[in-house]
Length: 161
Image (cartoon, rainbow, N blue to C red; front, side, top):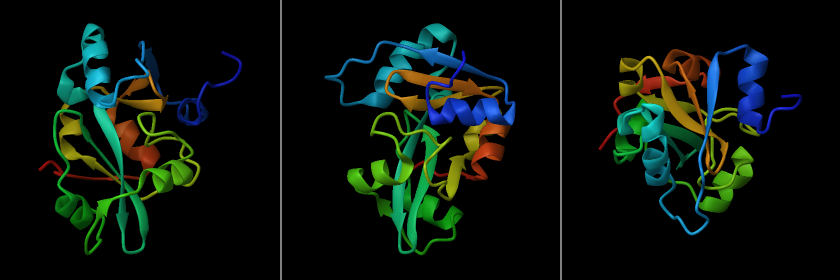
């Protein structure tokens, strides 16, 4: 591949991190991007708990990122605490897309336009590989969770509700 297809993949290549790009058919009518990924990636031998969603949250000082398994709901209180924020809410779609450079449903924790403070659910560390968005709807990337933490400069915490 001469040129990386997304900034997330470019970031992985630039860092020399071992990864696998997992592509699947994205139905443009789908509104549950995470559930679509879970269903499609079951054939790759990934459990639903190994497939992570990237949520952009807003705190008093700006945006941040919470990365957690698709089947679980985010505890905004736990994410805020992990990032040393007094409180957090879900970011507005336009703000999340503008800040990260990705569209909703394809927001990756990697290769963002402006890297944001990130918290990854600690359950990621129980697996040898996890998948997260590769920066495009229908594209995920599988990698070692330690590398995801390293490349995003993330903290880890239990952020599931």
